[in-house]
Image (cartoon, rainbow, N blue to C red; front, side, top):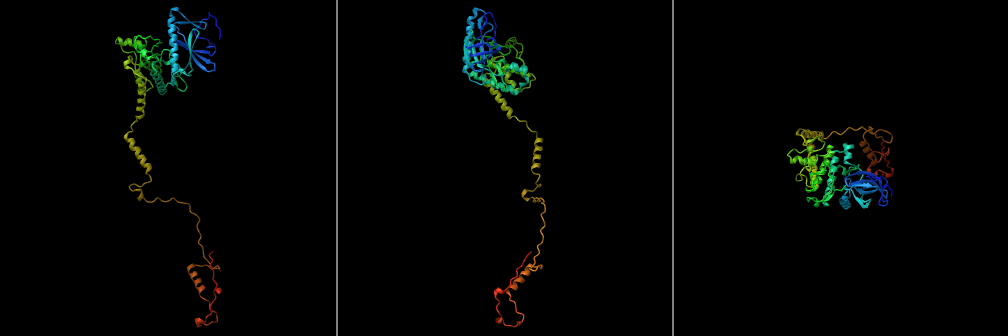
Length: 417
């Protein structure tokens, strides 16, 4: 561990400071709030983590590495702060939600306490609005709002309020994943609903509802939703809503509410997205959205309505569309005749093949045969009739004629060339 002279007084722990016997090494300071300082650190496995130090600027100073009280009379307040800090760590360690930062360890050192948490990459909403406001489209803001409501609903279901929802406590990474951080002001819902209950929270003008300023007013889920509405107001307009105390003062004196509904401005977002934000920012609790689930239901109903809504087609466009389709599909038909009675289509012309030449039959001597049937009959007659000798008279009786052996009969073959 590095050594420092007791005379050296500083608020932030310097870089390379070792904590918990070298298990953590401070890399740099990230931010400082009312009740703590956060650092980027490295653990013994070379992983980047966030260390949160319990340090109330209104109560403490630093003597070397140790945290010291400005006034000894505030010892009890600081002990209560340490107890609350450790309780925050135990609460967060019990949460397991992708939209809420995770806690790994809490330990005591330097007369104070430290909390080791996941290092969530990304920029807070203040940085995004200042440096890349074009990124905040309606689509992205809807995605962010849905993630934020799920994380807040999960928190409320576990029995406590966040009570410090603001642009600096949301981180948005390059994949548009939102993470809710800093549960230092969280309190049990049961205790928050009791007036005069002991509370420790840091109010933020523009983001805290009026009940956060007065210990006599009960707090409930709508209190966190007011702060979320104010965060959305900042994302849309670049400004926080008017201070809730000034709004309450105007209402008490009968003056107009200094808060102007978002629907009265020229913002590039839909009316259905703005309406729940306006309601969440209602001054009085009874007029606000009652739960994160109710807000989510409003978003779901709006999306369903937009998905089912279709722009009607004018009648003249319907008629022209039908006529075009009929013309394209029936171009080959003849008007007034069913297909079965239509004339056959003319077959397509084909390329003519070679002309066949006429074959001329001839006999064995090459003489042409013009009548093949007559020639064959003549040859058949010659085959069955015996030939008469030249000197034999014509009146020889039939019985005296010599029989002709079948072997002596000459059959002439017909050749077709």
